[in-house]
Length: 256
Image (cartoon, rainbow, N blue to C red; front, side, top):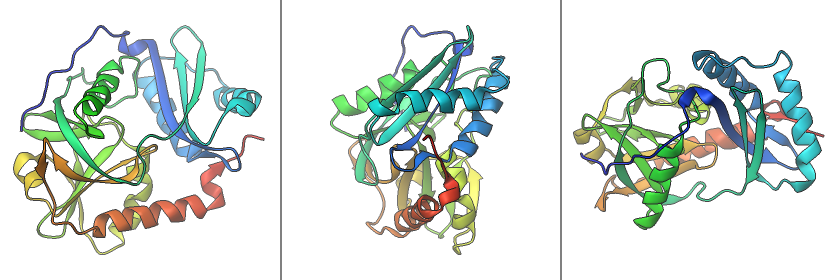
């Protein structure tokens, strides 16, 4: 499995840390506590010092901006110079059946890899390349294995009924994936972390990509080659797990 090259001039990775999460005008920020833990962890890895009361600062700024916000996604960024950048956008693809292409992954040093850092142009360009190819999602490949997605975490259901997700250190630790892992594990499907190699992807029963914006979207083709057998067991399970989280009031942080 090979990918198209993606390269660009980018901001230094340690010049900012960010996260993107769901926003509802009625309910607030979805899984803000989980995003906050990862945000803090990634800031430390990137050697960015967050203000002591940074969560309060973020919520206050969103409250001040909420009249301009729509249901969708909120991107929260903090720069190494001490500036907050907060923006809102609509969903593009969410809980849909979609197609994907592969792109070659940029490999970052150990302390940068897997973080939501400032040099994110590679991900933006991969998404643009997917759209230019007439598909919805770009999957990053390295050494003939899928390691991550442009906006979410790919997971597979293999021929033996085992659910797999990427063990690559380059993969971002997806909040959506890790929030529903307990339900996946209790569903009867064995869940394994490993290398999503070319053979496994080509012969999988089902492939789903999970993300704050994507929800649980099924991938039916990669590079114009069909994958999966048309069943939606894994997709259905992921969407049910996400719906349960959405119905739980404790999953939301109000911004009134």
